[in-house]
Length: 542
Image (cartoon, rainbow, N blue to C red; front, side, top):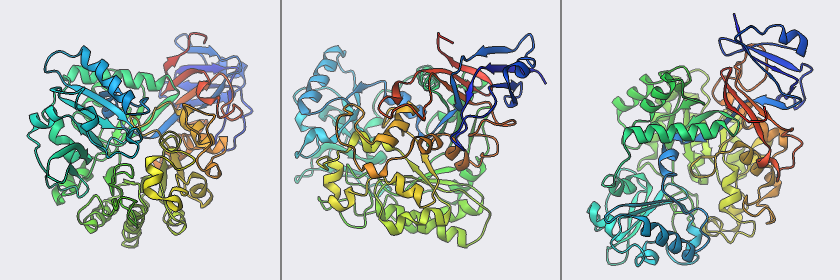
C-alpha cells in the first residue's frame, strides 16, 4: 500500500499516558491509517514520489481533536445574523440593533443570536425594551441558549401569534402578559418555530457554502471530528454533498432528534437510519431532550427555581421517554439526552438503568450538559456506564463566581455551587467528554480545554473562577477531546490515540498543550490539521 503522508521531526503526544512517544516520525497509508511509527530515517524511507513529506521541526502532534457536542448546520445558519453575544446591557443591545436596522431594506428581517439574558438585569425578558428601535421591523433574536428567542411585534404579527398556544413539548410556551398578549418571548423550539416558519430562508446553495465555510474554520483550529447533535432539515443531505465532493474537513457522527410525540413508526425509522452515511460521516445514535434550560426557566429541577419555574420535563409524559430509551437500547442504539436540571438528569439515569435491567448488549448512552446535580445522582454515571458530556465554557462565560448571574440567581446558592461538576464526575469514574455546543459557545477546542482548566470568563481572565475545585488537569482536558469522544463513540480501538492502525486524524501545535498555561492555550498556534491522512489546514510556516 502506498504512503500518503509522512511527518518528520515531530513530538508525538500520547493522551493515554500524557508522555511523548519515543518515535519522532509517522507514516500514513492510502487507507488513511497510521502505517508506521519510527525515527526520521526509517519513516522517510517509506515515502514515494506522490507522498507528502513534512518536517515539523519539533512541533507537537496529538490525535485530532473532536468536539463532543456541536451543531454544524444550525450554527452555520445562526451565526450569519447579528452577533449579540458581546452586549453587556440593554443599551448595548439597542445600539447594535439600531446599527443593523439602518442597513436593512424596507420589510427585510433582522436576525440576531447569542443574546445573554443577563443584559435584562432584574427586568423580565421580553421585546418591550427594543420596541422603539424595532418599530415595524420583523426581528427574531435568539437567546444564547438557543432554546428561546425574542420576536418583535411585527414578526409576531406576520406569524399570526397573538396569544398563548399549546404544544407537544411540555416546556414550550408563547409567554404572555396578564392580559394574554405575547411579550415577545418564545420558549423552546416549538414556540420559536411559529415565527421561524414565516421568516425568509437561505437558499440550498447558501446553506451549503455557509456549512462548508464553518467546517473549514473548525479544521483550522485542530478539530478533526464532531459529534453532531442534530439532523434537522437538509443536514444529512448537505453532509453527503460535501463528503461526495471531497469537501468535508471533519469526521462527523450525527444523532437525529427524537421528540415528544414520536410514535412506534418514528422510533423504527430512527433505528433504521443508524449506520447510514458516507466516507466521513454517519448516523450514529439518537438525540433526545429531557428538559430545556435554567436561564429561561424550562429546565427540570427537583425544586423550583427562584421564580417558581423549571418544574416539569420536556416530555409531557416522562415515562414515554423511558419506553423509547428502552426500545433504542434493545436495538443497540446509543442515546444522547439533553438534561440540564437535577430532576432531568435523574430521570435519564433511571431510564437507562431500567433499559439495562431489561437486557441487551453494551450500549454507551450519554447525558448532555449536566449543569447541576447532587452527589447521589453524580455517582450513578460510572455505575451505569453513562458518558457525561460537558461544555465547560458555558460555565466560564455565562455564569459568575459571585453567583450574581441569571443562572445562579435562579438556582440559589446551594445548587449554583454544584455548577458543571467536571472534576467530581471524573473522580467518580465517569467518562467525561468535552465539547462546545457551538453555536451556543465558540468552537475552538483549545478554548474549550482552557475553560475546563481555568473556569474563568474568556473575555476577562482576571475575574475569579467559578468553582475552581471542579477544574480539570491539562491531560484530563486533552483526553476530553481525544480518548473520551473515541470511547463514547465505541471507537477507542481506532481513534483518539497515535498508534499503528489508528486513523490518521491528527492536530499539530507550535508547543505542548499540556505545559502551555491555561490562559495562553487558546492562542497556541495550530500548524497542521490532518483528517484521514489528508491535510485540511496548513499554516503558512509549515
